[in-house]
Image 1 (tube, rainbow, N blue to C red):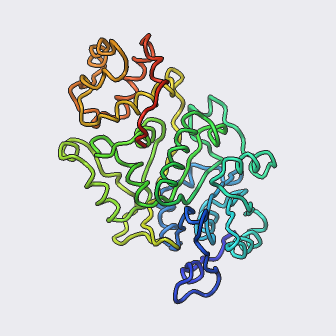
Image 2: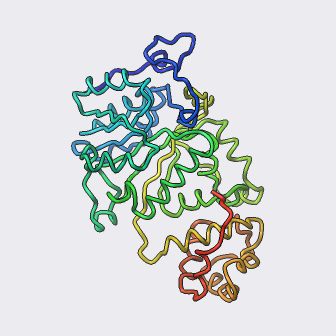
Image 3: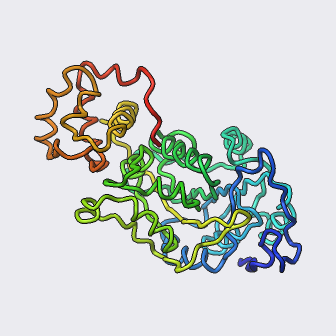
Length: 366
């Protein structure tokens, strides 16, 4: 079963040529933080084909959980590509009721519109308790072999701090096997505005290297499925000369658009990022790891040998252990890889004075 394409005129938010398929939404108060949505279905279709994700799923048993699709351009694209058994759509904006109800009808009920807000964690408990979302839970042995083959999460995230906070929480929950992580190694696809994109993808040597980017590298396998040249240029500008000369800084998108990937209604330049949980490392304490990353990233330009003192009295005695594990302790903290942070964390877990890492106020740097 294939759904008809939603043309730009039918998906545009207002606009001089709008057919009236979607009414103009009054962006005021609480609604102003909501996400923009993609209007170019051809681009979404092409990104999915290039991703080759179809072979990663058992379509006959597959559930797609989609957040904030707007009028359903991405809903149509995802449904046509994966042909899932169930496609649950979380969209609280009443303005999109007609196009979403139409998709539910055209899909013979396989698309289910839930009139709730995907930005509230309670929403996910509601759809799970009501059995609207009822995927199989992966066993530990299955998680060692592959990501979840029957559940995919897709979302448009909002611009600014709201989008960054949400993607950071997604990473926290997937790494700890909380939220959708309770089902196993769940893959997420996110359309992100430029600001959260740059923060998420900024790797070692990036001037604003964040806890969010370290978590992405440490706990997920990630790819950029689609990005614009302008977003890639902004990302490149944030790297030091040393990083550009010594490390792979480009995310190598599968699809690069020469023009901004436009969205409505905020006219934002979007990037499509894929993240999939890695198998859990039972020897790693995630709270200790998070504390170490937050503390050390407050002094990105300082070498590890000097910043180690922030981790507790006598922590410098651990420096020889770092060196033995191949970590350059004279390297600025901002140039450490996620693998370096993981190694440091596992060594510090055995350190008797690590308890102080959970106390006090740490400057938020995500």
